[in-house]
Image (cartoon, rainbow, N blue to C red):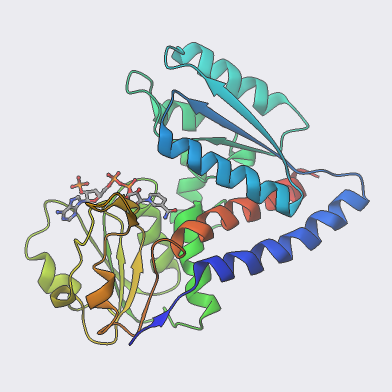
Amino acid sequence: MAIILDGKETARKVREGLKTEVLELRKSGIVPRLAVIMVGDDNASKIYVRNKSKACDEVGIEFEEHLLSEKTTMKELLGLIDELNNDKKINGILLQSPIPSNLDINEAFRRISPEKDVDGFNPVNVGKLVLAQNTFISCTPFGIIKILEEYNIPIEGKNAVVIGRSNIVGKPMLQCLLNKNATVTICHSKTKNLKEITKKADILVSAIGRPKFVTKDMVKEGAVVIDVGINRNSEGKVCGDVDFETVKDIASSITPVPGGVGPMTVAMLMNNVVKATKQQN
Ligand code: NDP
């Protein structure tokens, strides 16, 4: 039976540490502030934004929400980003995805000042991650590295396989694992013989978005299994990409959903806001 990698508890510890750092900042009159932009009415996004707001509250970060209508134009969105870029009180800016498809999210990410880009999606920060330079690492992969470290799971020299190549999870995950000296393979919907590849993984990260996609027969005995997926099963309950009940019998450790990667993502966002605040002061 695998060790359950407790993201909820690890995230709590991260927030606890940050709380102390924020108290110190506040003593010198510096109050970290995060601005979140949401465009449209996506229900899942509302829950994610609420979780981020709660975490800010706990850590002592001020939070402001900018809710834009579905009909917002690119010009209006970029105008708001410019305003927040120029506002000295704002230390971090986050654009919640998805945004309506008529808007260009990449252009919006490009517009967020790299110094305030706490999600790490500006190409400057993405480039720095590739070059292994100091940057804002996007929160989900960063949270995954953090939880592996918390449980003293070695990364160096391991075969790591990432399923999913999105810009927000798969690609930065590949980079983070590579920067930690893993040998990384990244898979996607066009990958042939997926199972043969996943079977070789010492560390298997799934970021696809399909319930029970990763089954026991795809996992090497003793592998570390990280489940990024947030899906709903047929009963409407939140579940990951991994068939947890069977895979936990073969893995050496595994993240649950909920309570695994999700809370870590939010905690690392808090980390990045505090880092941005310090860098700006
Ligand atoms: P995307 O839909 O952007 O990317 C999914 C990736 O999975 C794509 O690269 C796609 O390949 C690949 N894929 C889809 N089907 C298959 C398949 N049959 N075999 C192999 N690869 C496949 O999703 P995201 O990266 O944004 O999110 C992935 C999941 O993670 C979602 O459930 C999302 O909700 C969750 N998530 C969780 C977070 C957390 O904090 N826990 C944070 C962000 C996301 P291709 O590129 O070829 O299409």
